[in-house]
Length: 268
Image 1 (cartoon, rainbow, N blue to C red):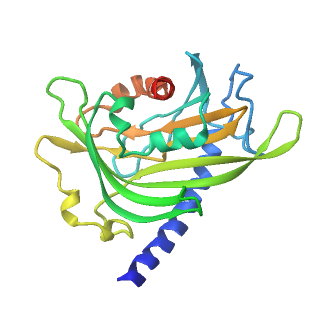
Image 2: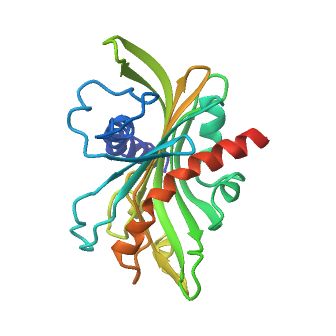
């Protein structure tokens, strides 16, 4: 059994390391037509090929949107949204707060109802007991906040990792920053590597609920000027009968969770 768990750990790491790398790139890309000078910080080479479109700066959150390719599985085109913000708290304190299934979750999202960790695949700590790499399968339930609309359940793999990223500054200099990455991606009952490692009953849709989907959703939290530069990327499809154009009408509001996060941390 121990050998099986070790094999699964190594396979999950290989599977999701590339996801983390691409997520960091997306989190840092400079948006076209952006007017903000505060966030002109990017990885080498990616600023010339961004598909992110700058929308606004609202309450110190720089919001960008990206139109993805239509999903081949569902023929639904759900926009991605991204928010960037400087928060005057340490990366570690923010990282500990935004993990999916914690006591903090209800304070960050009023639509959250309940959640649980279905399976911890692995969790690694450094010599002082700080989490530096982990993967777990979680299940969260949300109300849609709309009468007669069913609750949504999201089953996903969450990978969390402490990393170092190289930043290309405006003057051409390169610096290395400590950062944390939290990336979520939905699971399917498709016989895949992760799916086969968790109970089949987990995939059963409860009465009155609909399984939603998450695609490369999460946080990049980087040390910056005695605080943290936080980038939040989200692409969430509630599925069901809700048409994509309605979902996309409100997707620009999702990055405002960064202000909720900041307010919550200030109260702790």
